[in-house]
Image (tube, rainbow, N blue to C red; front, side, top):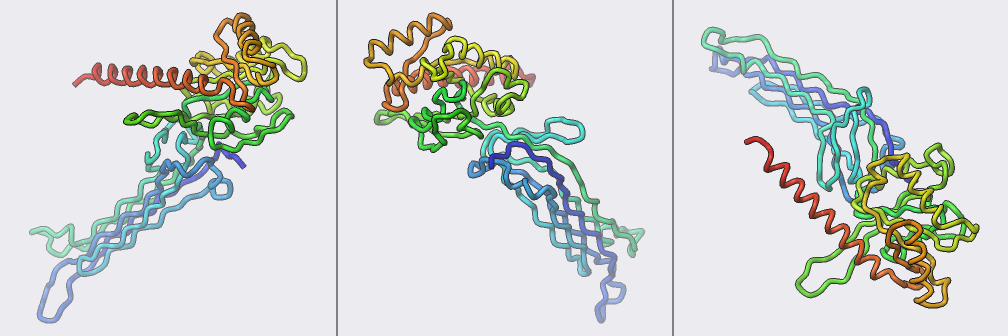
Length: 355
């Protein structure tokens, strides 16, 4: 089961109490205070891990509690610190304060950590309070109390390319043809019930870096998805982070619908979900072109569709591999351009920051 939302409560460990103690040894009269400090309580830490792909771990585990620190002891012995509880979450997890709705952290890179509940500090033992005028203090500090927080977790997949289109437009077939992913492929609508990720490897030459594109497939959109029809459009958040949308249109749908109107339907649903998502750079591909007899007919059909929708259209067939190499190269060029623009924007922002 793909779970992309969860509500949890996290509680840190309480700090251990400081100790009130006096040294008691033979031949050492008035040994003085020797109470040790309490140990620090454990923290609850959320860490982005590439090995995780859903929030499934939170389905039956809603409360995460770190252990308390141990109290101090005589002979200035400090209490043992509570162990941290590190909870793995998928890369792309957003962490919100459940009460205020404020975004606390965006774990968009593997290895990112967020201290959800910091462990309480241990209290000082009475040895800490010894002074020249107070050589026998009989006070110690209690450990800091437990910190509790209610959180809402939301997963947004991190990918270079997001596949969009109506059900049965060929998104799952394309993902399977371009990557090692194994999405469900069938000849009926809504075979994709949850998002899927795949990595497409492009050819490289000797001495060049590997070229890889992370592709995200989501359930198909239909008219009224923004109103909850079909599977709705909640899954669209998983392509909000993508740099490019790959819009697939079946050039000859089995239901006899108009490919141009199908393209407009998807664009309307994207716009209703988010104007920023609808404005992302797009590459459009006409799928299932193996149904046409020759390349000339395929190119002609793509040109006619391009004229109607007002943007270039690449004819492809996931079944035969026709057009897939050129499509990947076009996607690589577009994604590389987006990456360069992002880096330039970051550089400008850093340069404009006051010293």
